[in-house]
Amino acid sequence: MAELRHAAYCATRNIYDEMETAAKSLVATTPVDVVHFVVEDSEFPRPLPDFVQVHDVSGQGFFPLDGPNANTCWTWMVLMRVALCHILEGVDAVLSLDTDTICHRDASGIWELPIDGCYFAAVTERQKSANGLQYANLGVALFNLAQLRDGKADECIEVLNKRKYAWPEQDVMNYLCQGRICEMPREYNNMWFNDPVGNPVITHYAALGDAPWKVGSEPTRYRNMTWDEAIAARRYAGKGTVLFASNHSLERDEGIRAVWDAYQGKKELVQPVEAIANVSGYDVVVTDTLTPHVQNKDFVLVNIGHGITGGKRYALDEKRRGIDKEGLKQTDYVINASTKTCDIVARQYGIPMDRVVPLGFPRSDMHVGKRKGDGGTFMAKYKRAYLYAPTFRGRNDGDRLPSIDWAKLDAMLEDDEIIVVKRHYFQREPIVAQDVDRIVEVPTSEGIAPYLNDCDAVITDYSSVLFDAYLIGKPVVLTVDDAKSYLKTRGMYFEYPNAYSSRWLYAEDNEESLLAMLREAAQNGMTDMERDFVDKVADMCDGHAAERVCDFIADLL
Image 1 (cartoon, one colour):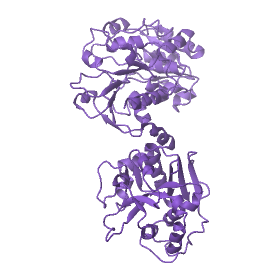
Image 2 (image 1 turned 180 degrees about the vertical axis):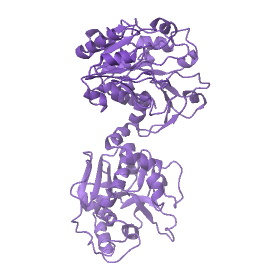
Image 3 (image 1 turned 120 degrees about the vertical axis):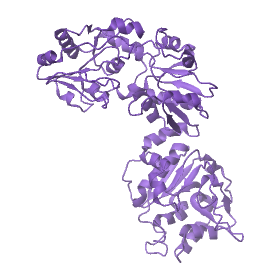
Image 4 (image 1 turned 45 degrees about the vertical axis):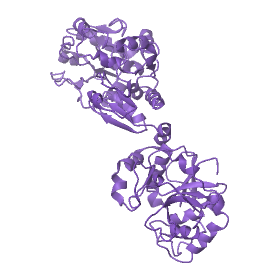
């Protein structure tokens, strides 16, 4: 047996898409070393990873294109499996797979099958095997190429060029290799017509028709997966299913979505977070917000939600109602944005500090490295563009938003200035009710990231958008009109507002000062104090937080 694990797919160009889908499922689940694409083009029409080798057999001399079996199946390329021992010189064994196969979990066991002295290993088709005949399906087959070079492959090629067969290469290789076929466990080639098994390693969609392949969840998953994602998914091969829990949809919640998108292993989503109180059978549950107490908890609970980025004392403030302290203490690990604030988060959750893991804030990945213009919004064309994004105030949270005279502020704006108002998605009523020309309130259904990218300065109050802004170098002006009442119920981890920004003011009836502060911020950018602050609270936010979190989750499984 060769030390390297080789796999091969043979396809004419009309089924290249299917071949890539099948191959990505194998790469994502199994540590295969080399994948061979046997095709009819010298160059594959799309970029491929380095470990995928393309073999052009358009000018092959094994089977004449007008031969008896050239049009027997949907692609003449199936005949190339018989010639793999010649096409793949120097390779002793190769796993050959049809282009309508999906690998669900690690298939490494196939390469360990005892094929010494055999020509190939494959799953026996029960209906076609009779009277001592072992008829194997070649949709998934481990070929002993070294053994086939003893003349058997050439014998099969010669017979295929003499007469027509219903299943050409499969019929001939079965008939001529009788007695030297290794039985492969059925879990490696699960077919509906051949005593299907539960929890298969590989599903073979043969004879099922187009529908299951076109719309099935697993083929669709790998069809939409990039090669980079398939390679990344190898880290999670053979791992259990991870349950993600959120109070919001994936489209709405940037934090849980970042990890969900990055995690290429088996996963499920449940809503709301309270639903985890009734789940079982998962090794790891990942949440994006505060969690309830769970009776008979049998999973590792990882929280990637708040840390201190929201700036509010969720657990330390005894006056805050609705906090399930027992639920917080059940959290096994909390992902933190910084190496320098783990002590704060440990106190927040009431857990030991070694269970606070500084890996970065996953939602920050979408912001890091962005500049003005990357958002693609209308804001980018303005010389000075300001984004107003206040936080939401609940029934007991503070007082109210400052009553800014938007018409007055609008009249002071110059032609190359604009203010975009982005209210919190919980707030139903518009913030700007006056007729204005250079102030635009955008829908709550739109994400904030594009506007954050394209602005020059941000106006907010207690929102975690402050941290997102600082990560991409956007200065922040704080409005503190209701700070006294807000802090009374919510609290902040550091001295507010001085620790958060060097620019703050009471905005109500103070439109001139607000605009002057925004212009100064847009011109001069962040101060050293603000850069030091973001380093303190988000030093692990480098654009790769979600990837690190996924690695951490995989290690827990």
